[in-house]
Length: 240
Image (tube, rainbow, N blue to C red; front, side, top):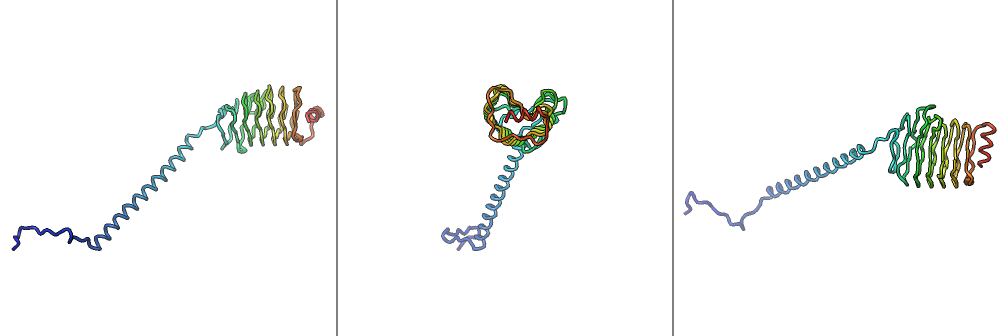
């Protein structure tokens, strides 16, 4: 006879999980796993968004006088600048303006749009520089800088469009355009062994001027696209 207050002990071998309880346990496990996966995916997505905008915010803001020390692509125009537009501060880098403009203040601006001084192995491309039109104002200024490439650039309404001077040797200028510059489209001064390929000069006082004892190598004709004065035409013809 079993006492009323006695507890019945069920042998472990007789314990079984009902089918309903088994399915419920599996369902809870799957639900928890799915939630974990969703939370993990959300965390990854949030981190990606955070990283993207952090990188955006950390990009340097380029303005007049900025120094470029790494490969750079412009996303907007710069200027008007009352002094230098951009300064190349590192060898072997590329400045791609992506058809954006570096703008001076006009007839009184005596600085340069892009300043490349004592640098080598630099590429400057797809830049429009305009409005550095004061006495000594220069669109693209290379000084004591060798083995650089200027490609697909435009200098408009500057005093000198492209100036390559003072032992700036073995530079390549290809597909550039100098328009409406009040003194020179292309000025090569005390420098040598440059390659000019497919450049154009239009409505500059002097299209191409050279002051060097060592001849410049021309890979292709630098063409004038408008009628000019006899002196300017003679300068261009002599250079070619």
